[in-house]
Length: 319
Image (cartoon, rainbow, N blue to C red; front, top):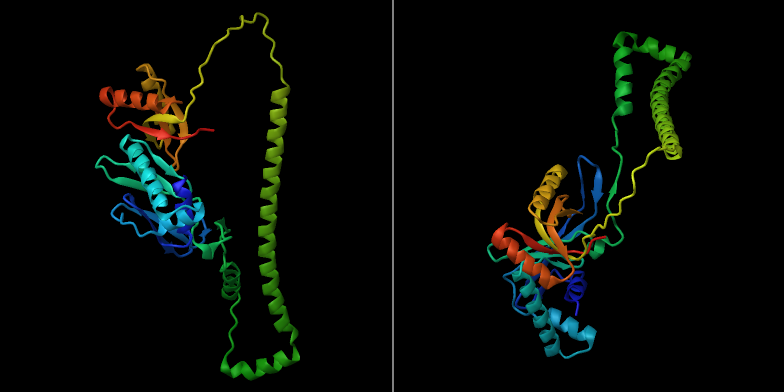
């Protein structure tokens, strides 16, 4: 039974889903927001959290499982209890429990469960179909600043004594008013055209640079190198690390530090390697990877006793 599937279904409709004798998954609605720096728009969503104190069975999860699987309520409760027992045993062994579309659970040094929610699914049904997008920055004051500059350069002053004379002149010569409007319009159009021309030049330069790079790559690929006295070919057998059970030595924000850690562990006899970045952007380094879980746990216990008490087991399928 995939317990996370049923929990995920209920999170769309309820703000609290209790797993008896384990804890509760809670949701809290947050409004849509705009990032000030990246100009990214985020739709409203439900934020997931986990409360280990709420363990009393309210019947919601068991009733839903009984309805979907067409089994009695008590059998559904027994299935939940069996699944919870299995999850707790893996947590005690130091493994990370990944609940699909919900988040990851891990036991900390104090024996408490830490929960890292997944950001792949938005459980807010009101936001269905809405996704994150980034917009270009809107500049609303550009034309206004141009007009203000023109007004400062060519001030127009009308005194009360000359108002009647100027009114009569304006009636006789209305083309002056239109000429002033045309001057402002031409100035604004010229500024906009200049900006457009600059953007066109930048686009042209970028396309030309890309074409030059493609031609350079093509020439490099066509080049041939002749070696008169080649060395004999050597055949090496390289063992490719496999397995979904990884003993984690650490995670580093700077990739150079992760490379140093790998070299250090290899000099100590471990089959250390990097397995990529985690969801926080940290470069993960492992002592070794294993296909068998019991073998991985045995090696983990040995490493904790002799080398690193902070090592832990990660269950993850690599691409």
